[in-house]
Image (tube, rainbow, N blue to C red):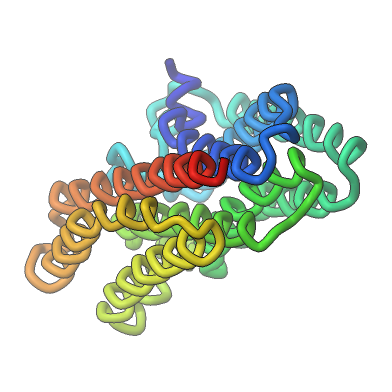
Length: 306
């Protein structure tokens, strides 16, 4: 159970949903191209790389003293396994490298069988994992990395199955990436103080240093872009508006998140973490539900295409 906590097992759902998005689009494009073996290998490889980056993040945050200062919640503040002494830093670091090697090994197989495109994606993944906790988050690029990662998971999964990069795969990847960036952005807000003291410059810190309105405005823009790209994807590419209606089911949830966030910024005490945990919970639920709707919507479009 300690290791499941260390790898943030619950958050593997984000990567699993991105892979499933890519696989469902493969079914829409041409079911005959679908390979179960390749699908299983992609899931395994992505899970290994996801575990690697999370373990390295915990390791470096502990070394820098950040996780000793954060108020840990279910969604933020690190896993707590190192501050609580449940695992040693050495064990966590070794596990992260093992997962990285396993993930790169599976990726190497696809480079051999599918070509240089997977090699480019794999190189980005390796460099990002190694630099995420030490460089990228210090430059406010954490959300950019996570968003790009989500996009490339979808594109890479689709490419492994079809040996092609298409507009629909790219648009779907953008949506998946934005959903991941949204969750990371919201979950980083409670850690602003500890991250500042630890030398980090997350996007939340950079925006807060300018104005609270920028943080609030950025959240609204993220939601608008997510819905807009989904509309183009289903209506303009897949030519089926039924999934668009499914997406609109989440508009009340979206408005609830935006309104609660506005109240938190302008009315509530910023130290009222309990209130913000509710916002984080709603955001994670929105992200996962929207991804599920994408998958269901693609399968609906596939049915009408037959």
